[in-house]
Amino acid sequence: MKIAMLGYGKMGKKIEELAQAAGHEFILKIDQNNRHTLTAKDLHTADVAIEFSNPDAAVDNIKLCLTNNLPVVSGTTGWLEHYSEIAELCKKENGAFFYASNYSIGVHLFRNINRQLAALMDTQSNYQPELTEIHHTQKLDAPSGTAITLAEDLLSEISSKDQWRNEATNDPSTLSILSERIDQVPGTHRIDWQSAVDTIRLEHIAHSRAGFAKGALSAATWIVGKKGIFGMKDMLGF
Image (cartoon, rainbow, N blue to C red; front, side):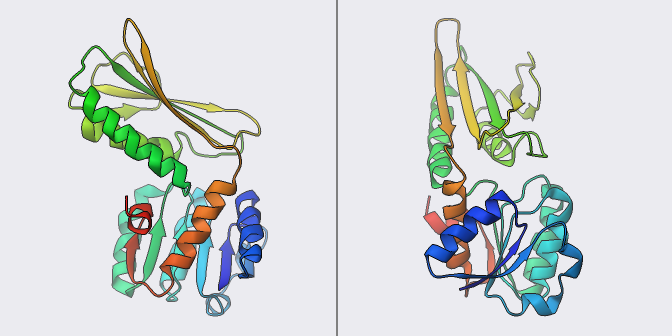
């Protein structure tokens, strides 16, 4: 499989390492220094694009792939206000687009457990949830895309809450997301259910970028030959 890597940073390099070990080829490595040289002709030599750039570049990168009939897997967060626009373009071009805020299979197992626990807790008004996310200092967006996804999962199950805020709050209808940035931290997401007598905690801690990179490469392999808009649930079945 020939891969165009749009966003050749730390994640891109880890994906390349796994791709080469699996016999795939990186034919394009695009970062902020050579993004201006990228052309449609370059993309036509690839089987799939993997997009891990930054919020400012992601939308244009995805559009360029879709308008040139190249399946694209994106893991960039912080641009989702444009998601409906990208979805419409994908349908118009009969393209293939795969998006996830987090490509770790462990995180998606964590999401399922989070939803199940939230459904149980909806009948327990003495417990209140709080979500914390911790990432490396180079992460540009806050809260993380994964934290937003986890928060939306919680809101779908908890009848007493109708919104989230990226701050501590005592508003009973609002879910707090607390963001911390610490050097050299791949990613931690934690949901605390607190009562006056105890705390129930769910936590996912990434030990390295390898889990995210493996999932993104699996998505790139999976999407080739398909048409439509996909996510981890489509690939994993849960």
